[in-house]
Image 1 (cartoon, rainbow, N blue to C red):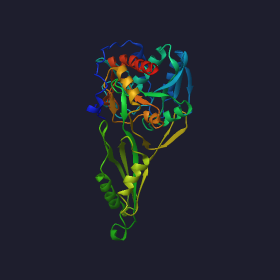
Image 2: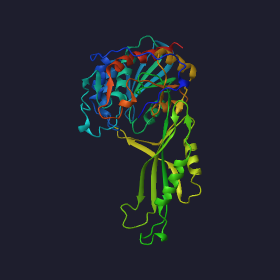
Image 3: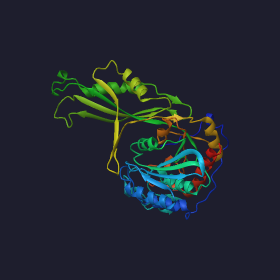
Image 4: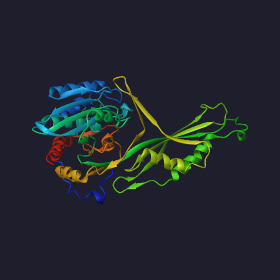
Length: 395
């Protein structure tokens, strides 16, 4: 997905400073990222990687727990009282759908052209490795540092981190996502809508005796597509995209379909709620009989055997504390970033906890054939996390 760059309203936090090139392939963070990339970790199948992360955290002196859904949480306690900061990067990756198309082994963690190649390198095993290095190295800090390696983000964004926050409230949440080491200060949300049309079956030789649900759904979708979408100066326009249509009976034995269902994928802007999305969609369909609209349900069986279920709604957010934002952006010396995608940070933002995104690599490298992360970005990431943590603690 294409990155949305900063608009003029986002250019007030200081000049962008380039990352110093450091393509060293022998650093601790590169070695750790390669170890993680070599372990396949599809959503619901993160157990082997969770075990490896647990071992690394324990070796570095973290207190470690594995929650019931399989997320790993490492804790370091500071030298004095202070706030709790939670850093999160997800363990899971999307599938490798066409291995033959890759020029580098998806799980080989190969080094070439000053890049580390492999599924999850950018999204988000690079962030996880860098966070682990940064938190392990930090000295003489107040409060508590928590590092969450969470599960099922790709299919159930924010669900696992919500469970972590239920047990460990935080004063700041920093989510590792590929932002090119710019501070993510805004993010689109997501919703899945199901639109259902009910008609009446009949023999296709006498369709006038029935009520074709497909035609009814086509009329409804035309109205939904005509709805104006909201606009945000930093995040751009909202999105409402048709992604699936199915009718019943299927396959049809020559019957007028009595049921037709569509799924739509929405990308949301700050201020939109599940209720407002459903209300505006339902309102435009009031004159069409037999139409219903609901949020889709999303579920995933975790590697622990338990299942997480959630409504397919993840809110957008922005401006999680303008004073804090300015201080953290200044600590990085880069322009802020508005993410057109959805992340675990929504779990914190929905609780009014200040939340930001930060990580090496670009979203343009994520979910693609030959995913990669630049070594200079990866090597610079631990210092970037340390700079943000220090800036927050010095407030």
